[in-house]
Length: 113
Length: 111
Image 1 (cartoon, rainbow over the protein chains, first blue to last red):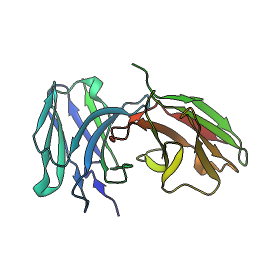
Image 2 (tube, chains in turn cyan, brown):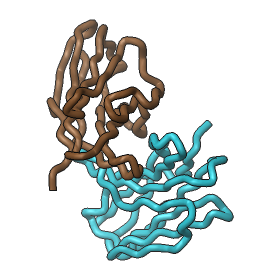
Image 3 (tube, rainbow over the protein chains, first blue to last red):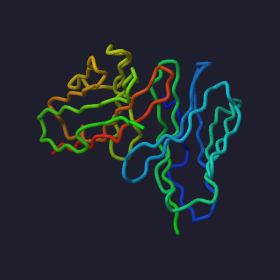
């Protein structure tokens, strides 16, 4: 069964629009980690954030922000004032006690000038 | 800062040939993970090593094997290659506290 669900397959926005990527996860572990990675067309996986299950504080880093809600098992990611360079595939991932990453299917974000 | 090194970056093989992918983790990282990402897919966990011992195994075909050496570098050996093995293969390294750093990937094309 898929442990991480990213319901949005593709999102297309115009520059300067905000875009929110949804991520819902499933785990029975009480200790786990959630991640977001960016994969630009060049193919590398760029680490964006790690959040542990005991830290529900939202986080902001520049134009990026994350909303972690354990009550709904969600870890959503928002890009504010999007730019063309934000065009990429974004993956949400879960790591449980075995440490390996389980990725969602990814959301392709296209930002048009 | 030093990053994870993977070699080669690109590899083209014929069906039924063998391939060896190499991964050099960040210094002082004792854990290595291998992931396979097919076209249009998300990365799938293959296998991991901690302190040179296999620590976990995912959906890795029997035709694949891997090991971690005394200097902590790891090699993924793939035999009897099939067209479906064409993918991007990522190596990630971490200290035991779980933050994985990914290498740039090896793009394997099987013709």
